Image 1 (cartoon, protein in one colour):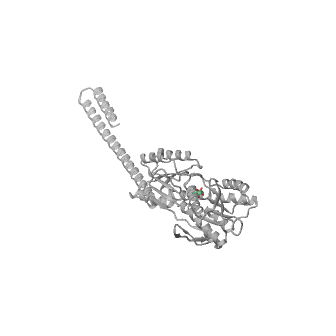
Image 2 (tube, rainbow, N blue to C red):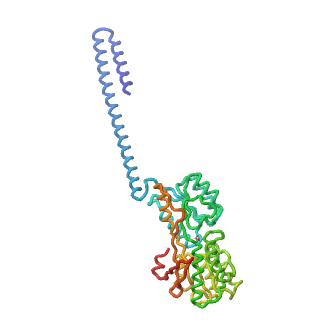
Image 3 (cartoon, rainbow, N blue to C red):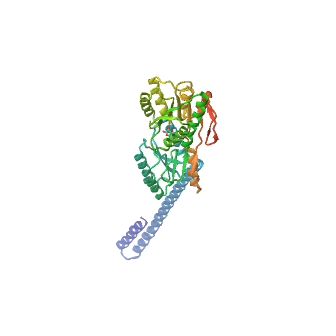
Length: 394
Ligand code: AHR
């Protein structure tokens, strides 16, 4: 722009000089025109510099503002407990089959929230093992920072865990175990074998107290091949074998209320009048079994023909203990997520978390059903179900 103005003014001066000829007056006119051109060019240059300075100052101010906003955002995240970067977590959850599962999912969503500095990709695998492997591969593709798996079944994991390892993504296993691979950082969960043994040892002590000489048990198992099913079945069976009890049958109810009802309906037909113990491998199966027994006219619970044992001890299960329907309930704590967060924070700060972290469980009954017993030589303490206990449960 500056050069254009200058050239126009010089051309004007030259034209003025030419028109005026080469005499003194002409020279004077040309000089005057040239001076005017110079002055105009200087003014234009000054104006342009001013515009450039103003633009630079505005750009600097904008950059400063952006940096301040970014710093403020980082400070907010740091105040929320993070390093300033959002941590991306993928969670391949089993499904939504039970009250326990709902509590587990809620706990994870509460802990791995945006407010806590996390971005959680959650997949409900609907009890489908193939879908769960697919979910994990999806997390690898996404490039998440950590993968949490609650394995539907305990085998078939080595290939996909190797893929996670190759991608450099640490895997944390919760609740159920993986038994055919150790390519994960930590497992956080309950001891299912101990839960099964506790149920068996409690039954032995309670039956003795009640003067019950013979045990004829029916088991409604959890999802076949899940470590929760395997541990509870094995633990209870170990005590049953040792005590010479009869296990009339064991079939899966898939950890659902519907499954529990279906299996119990069939048991009520096949074993009418022949059983005095029903073991349900979770509360929801117990609710279904109760409906089936109600329909078949079978009386269960303390003081009745059939002892009903359950696992999980969620709020709804403990209410049935209080109502005198479930005789004893063996907890499986679903609140692993806060511990998993601890594992992730240890990894974030370059530490090495423990490979196995047990979440403690409690055993529940009403006062008349509380008896002394031991598991593997360790004395157990039962908790009396009260309104306060139910209120505090999940
Ligand atoms: O893996 C834990 C088990 O799975 C719980 O006992 C049951 O309720 C859930 O579905």
